[in-house]
Length: 241
Image (cartoon, rainbow, N blue to C red; front, side, top):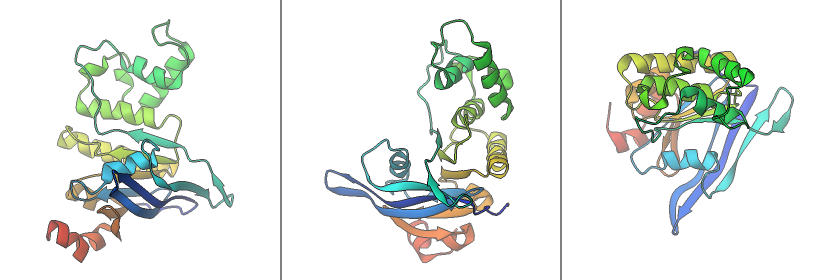
């Protein structure tokens, strides 16, 4: 796998979340670099999805997320893309892929006549993921793999510094999973993008992660997959694999 270029760094610093005086996350800190896929693992209740929500600023928390451009030697505002674990989509919903995509990137109501410029932008970004043929398809009729391609296209328009994915391959078949991770590999290599991905599939983590973060309300262990999986911290929680 390609090594991180080291010129851009996202710092997660002392993220803490409390709910009714109970610590959900406590002083979570780690760094990720451009061109790096960091995969977060942990048992149910370890705070994985909560951490993502805190980074996205969707829940109340303390701590901060900072993005540094070492090439320019300055801190910059971070651009974050997000692919959720699932969407509540009704099968008979008439919304097309174009409608959904256009609603994210255009200020014009999507029920008006299609804007040619917006249509071309949508088509171009779907094309990056081999999803251009889905542009007129109803969102409710997409397969799991097709929906993830569309969500990836939306999340990376415009190209973010950090892409966040919450167990993104749920409901996707084996071939779809392989294609999905190949797309992530192209993204991080072509755009030097930092990616944070929550996963419960240790085989996928071993195969694709540049860095693994073991979470249990705080960072218990981090490093290469083989280092984390052979650590006493991992074995205490999951046993030997």
